[in-house]
Image (cartoon, rainbow over all chains, first blue to last red; front, side):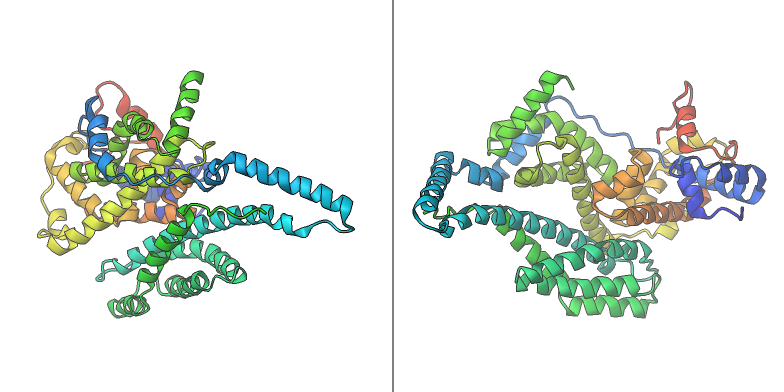
Length: 251
Length: 217
């Protein structure tokens, strides 16, 4: 085995490598790696968890007192809205549809198609909310990675973490953009398209850019106002997501 | 949690999701101290932790409609707290960058105490201050991932789920945090730790937990 990398030693320290026997054997045999491991060990031993200040039993009540006035009107979950939105009305509507379909089938040669969309539209509504929630989460994550890039320390930038993170986000971004295009949601598709280009720029840029290169990336992201667009769209989707379902005509 | 507790918790959650403020108050009372504990470990600052506690419960209340009742509320809340802490650290770093007077290099170049073992050194105020400064120099994501791995004992997989990032990003964040801490804290080493090659953190923890040993990673 060649010398252990620092990453391997870190994983070994935290037991994330499953206690690989080849690493242990190497550490036992290689003085250089053993010294490196000991040095890392010493450092990490210094980082002890800070003592958490005590909070007594009344603490939670204090917290509640502080936040209760800030709490907004609770938006009931979408499924709750349409279940709670008058269950009787839903039951009556469904019964009406069934009876109408039955009678229609008996009287006319073809079933009555007008009653079917009422149910399928509810399914579509549910699917739409799931889609919005997923995209909203995706945008919030993307905002974080872009913020990390923009706020990185300009003197000695190492973007490798942000690149790995952005690469993780790219696949889901493509999926959501395609879905938005198919749903003819031009607003969402447009922002996701811009976001994809921004993420690609981060992924394919240098991991340790020079100050000039880094400034150029930051300037391009600023010029496209990408962060602002992502944030606004995330808010917009969140609003759409929690908006109460409008009662639909079932007759 | 007993069966009755689970049923009761489920009923409280259901009420809270329907907008029952009293039910949500019960959730705050049950989880408030645990939330503060995590927020403090993540941010390392009492005031910031208090802000995170409030913001976390505020967000949880707003997002209750998205909580799946089959999931564990504590885990779901834990994730919100972790993300609120990251946001708080980002905001703080922004302020810190604008106002800090003492650079990291200055802190790192302070003379280290001598004549004590690592456990005692870790207890000294000087070491604690320098460790605190070194942690503050990490990016918000690095610090969050490191705290969850080092102090909370969370796996890389769990960290990625809690912070909503990929496993490779979570792993990278821990790597970078450790590398930066090694550079910053290297001057503090005074005497080598005697340990067998291949010793893992769990073995060290067992050693630290033994009677007469200090330190609580």
